[in-house]
Image 1 (tube, helix red, strand yellow):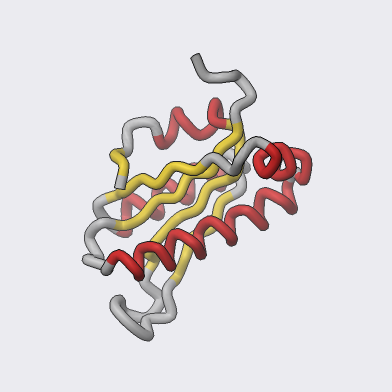
Image 2 (tube, helix red, strand yellow):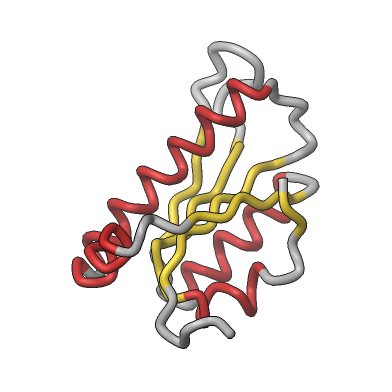
Length: 121
């Protein structure tokens, strides 16, 4: 059984953009760092605990931009730290494409009700 206070970070990638593996890795890294800094600004104790516990992450996917934006808006509404990645469009995707979403690190109990039905990337 999961601990009630488990902390993790969730990265969500759009699967409709046909990004290569390297591009996906770069977008996931952007999402991870951007949302980490959002979480740090909101609650430094949560981010420190996450770092101390091994930086648990999960990478999930959504089918399109609309699904990514809906998730972003849901987390913003709940005041859970998150960051939406907009790509510069210099390589594989058009400029300003929303490619990924980073959430947390934050409490799993707050993340799972929103992300629990998404599939692993």
